[in-house]
Length: 368
Image (cartoon, rainbow, N blue to C red; front, side, top):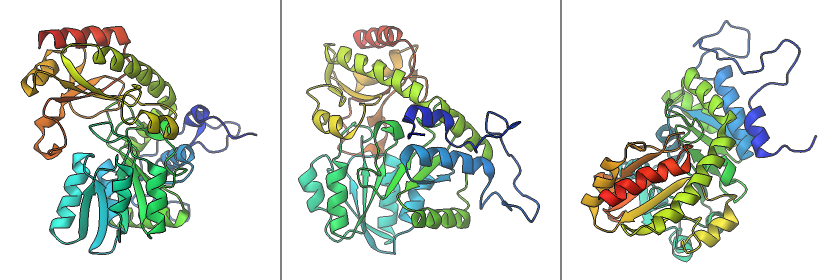
């Protein structure tokens, strides 16, 4: 048969070849230990439920997936593969948890970390130098900026470095990071992949089997293995990933346009807008613009807080990628740093009806 469409992969991937009498849904295996003589011994090494989730994500990314207990555990596992003192180039804007992890490793001398604006391709390439790893994030969190991953991958490989891409905001459906040259693709599967704000989960997808084997061994040593119930929920989430991403993205496109026309909003950051700095690159690099919007409230941070407090249907909460729409002012967190405007609001657009979302947003914006 021909290679299936990614939407079909979401429905089918992770299951074994069916035979008569098999369950249609991949079953949940909760046991932590197994009788000797079979394929499994102890859950820290492997389990059928975890492997089913890994097969599904690997099929979507066209690589070898290794599941972890969280996105942070997945990120740490990639960094732990570097020799002590290795130089890492990271983005000035990216998920604050990973930037905090990098800063901690730098402080104790485990890594030598430097930061660069990776949305500026020439500057990002110049900064690679003798780095062993380039850590990228595209679209980035929370400014929704776009990095030229193909150019960065080519430049990194020419200099003997590897490229790790946090593609959480893109999902495997909207960006094929391995095909763009990445050596590792990291997802906080808590977000879009699981998709229901009810499970903590991470995953790394490697371009080769050697990388996956090394990560699996590191996971067993550190105990960063996910629970079977979490991976079961992650696999269940993948079944509807295409539907959720399509609906959320359609909503985001509409909301970005309406926000851009509201007098209380001074700037909208969304690559689906024609005048967004990342629009042209996102058009080439991605198959869609995603469901994350960042916008700035012209009256300042207090007005932005008022918007977040004023919504009723939208949840004023952290995280992203669930079926529900979430809103928060990112500058409320000291770790976001100088590159994130104090009046910036991050909006994770969900699957509700777009008019209900806009009514809620417009009322809060008018009130602020």
